[in-house]
Amino acid sequence: MKRRNFIKRASLTGLGLAVAPSIISCETEAKTDKKAIAIATPVLPIVVATWNFKNATKAAWKVLEKGGASIDAIEAGCRVEEADLKNTTVGNGGSPDRDGNVTLDACIMNKDGGYGAVVCMENIAHPISVARKVMEETPHVLLAGKGAEQFAVEQGFKRENLLTEASKKAWLKWKEKSEYKPIINIENHDTIGMLAIDKNGDISGGCTTSGMAYKMAGRVGDSAIIGSGLFIDNTIGGATATGMGEEVLKTVGSYLIVELMRQGRTPQEACEEGVKRIVESNPNYQNFQVGYVALNKQGEYGCYCVHGGFGISKYQEGKQTYIKSNAYTKKA
Ligand code: SD4
Image 1 (tube, rainbow, N blue to C red):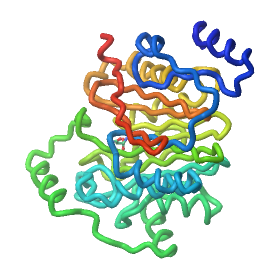
Image 2 (cartoon, helix red, strand yellow; image 1 turned 120 degrees about the vertical axis):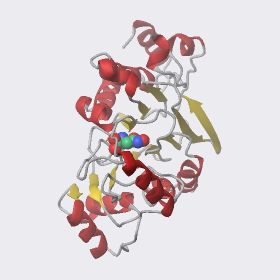
Image 3 (cartoon, rainbow, N blue to C red; image 1 turned 90 degrees about the vertical axis):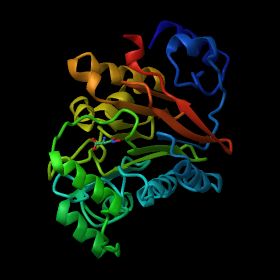
């Protein structure tokens, strides 16, 4: 922990306040330090999500404001994006792989350290709900491909075609050249990673995606992999990711961020370190985006990304806010 933060934390603890002060911002430390806000008690409930997913955080908030559990809020929120046909990187309407098949990855984690996930699952529109079933109804944590689909059907999910006409048209156009550059467009990718704390102070998280458009058949990204696209520890907080999954996987990004928070970093500091780990060992970083959002048990949040254009949606105290993330490249 940086010395000044330690001093701030220590001085408030000395005053007998229940919770250490927080930096409620996704801006750089230099900026946030000036407007650091000390809070005595967490302002709960709260939900944060990657990107400006207003409808998703609103759906999650509806659960939380009624006193619902964070796990229910996460499922409800993520389902909104999975159902949105205009979102071509999540659920129904997602972009296909290079063979024209829409394959989905999703995971969910609860307050008890429970984890459930599906990867490379086809024909089922709500992988976040299937992931929850894996967590709650099976002795396993991760089901892949046909097995995941079969399990979903056994659980009452309907098979449906997830390839929309628009996604098919875009894929056919891509096929004309079949030029695969695994570069995620900086402004245009929308995997949803969501973290929520309910009124009881319990945190849960979820992450759901169709992955990178025109990926190789069988490719699995970070989103459904525990510790990479998502990690939750109910004693510390949670983190989730969006962007180039290969980079997040290689650095076990979300787990790293939660562990950094355990060691005393703020969510903001932890997200910045997570991004730094990726870019400082990767000369190719100009060509991909990764964005993180983290939330600790005190309801403090942070976000950071490789390139500008990323931001997070937050719902707290009945109010929705979009927070623009600072980016590593601005420092270059
Ligand atoms: C993946 N992380 O499959 C996902 C993609 C993503 O916004 O986040 N897109 O690598």
